[in-house]
Image (cartoon, rainbow, N blue to C red; front, side):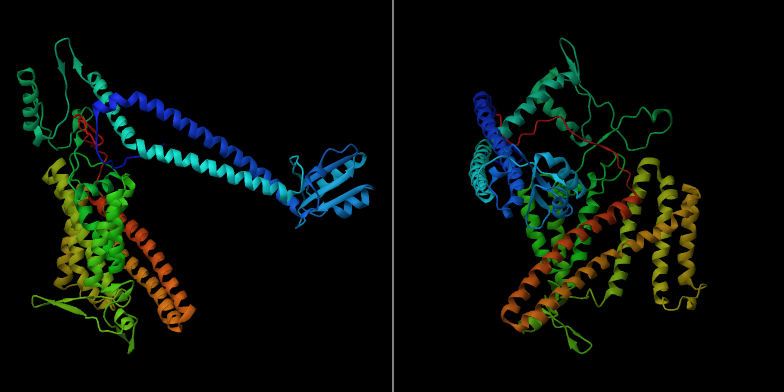
Length: 599
């Protein structure tokens, strides 16, 4: 019945499930088996009719009824396809032959005396003949095809009725099936639990992991249920140091409990898509929850798209249940929030059009103010503070936006190196963290210090004063960082230096994606609103169609490109600075009821 996880109006009691399960299973098995068997038979017959129909279609242009193709005593009939026309060759070599050709000439029906059939067959093969057997029947091909169409229509109606019956069964019994499956899974887990623990005739012994913060809560719950008949001992509170030496191989993997609180729990799936964090490293879900939607919103930066993303994301989070679609819905909703914010205040645009009038080179650009013939403001005043509605243009301020992207990249990498420092300090101690991660913090800090000076002399690098403080101080940080990195990681650290520059430059995609989207939107807007719509009439309608189809294409590309490149900056650039993964997810022994109730 293809029943998947779904919302149900109310939970079913365990007592009701146990009472009705046998009767319901017998009923469903009979009804579903009958409907499915009927569907299969109909589907097979429809496929047979389709094959028969395809075989008859070439005969439509041949003026012969089906009974003329078979049941001869002295005549052999060849029907099939040919590469080249065999008629002239047949009439030269065979005395008694008649050739009928379908429209197009690739299908032929050849009637030949049996005595000359072998010669006719040889000539046909020379012309690329492929035999197509015909089913026996009576009447003209178009009449037979008409009958096939009528039978197919009747079969499809019965097939649709069987589908409707299954759909109705699914709708009526979905809650019961889900509840039954849940209860039986619980029963199986309860039955298997004694196999996981040591037992005697008078006692049992269980050992496992619980979150340290919940130790007192677990003790109290056990005492409440079992009184003095239970003894709980905390054997070890696991620290986060990395095991070394002879104990390393024997060390048991500690499970990791990820956040269960929304909205942070929604972003845990993005981390688990790569791998579960280890016990002795920081869960990056919090960072992804902040910076991934921000990057997505920056690459989109459009009020109209942002609002549509939020609406789709909200609908998805309410309706969908599969992990993949919930991830996409999470990206759309939170990314849409930032796309709307950036679209209003940073870029001031909707559907690729600025709100306020834009004058470039003495020519007014297409904008909402221009289209609506009214002056929309460049800013709004709030509590005496002027808040701009659009600071940058994606197409005119590319250099500025590229620079901002680089600074965002540096800040993001600082976060990654900071988390890496914390992880190494947690696992191996502060000294190791200094050598392995703080060295790269110094290198990146030196790069960040010298970057403004380099940009100021970008048009003439040779004019830089390499003896100035603006060069020597950053260079000192870089050199100290390289020395520490070599001490901590060996000579391979030098080979990683170009990778750091590559990481920084990779963030320019934040501007590149936004600019490319804005360029596409501008092209569609100019075609639809400047070239077609002003002509009026049919051109106006055509312009509206171009506008809608064009922006739908931009909308889809924005989802794919902003989503893919936004998460890539985390998986490749950020995670490479601190994240190992490969941990074991904490799966507590507990009963979770979504569809059933014990009362």
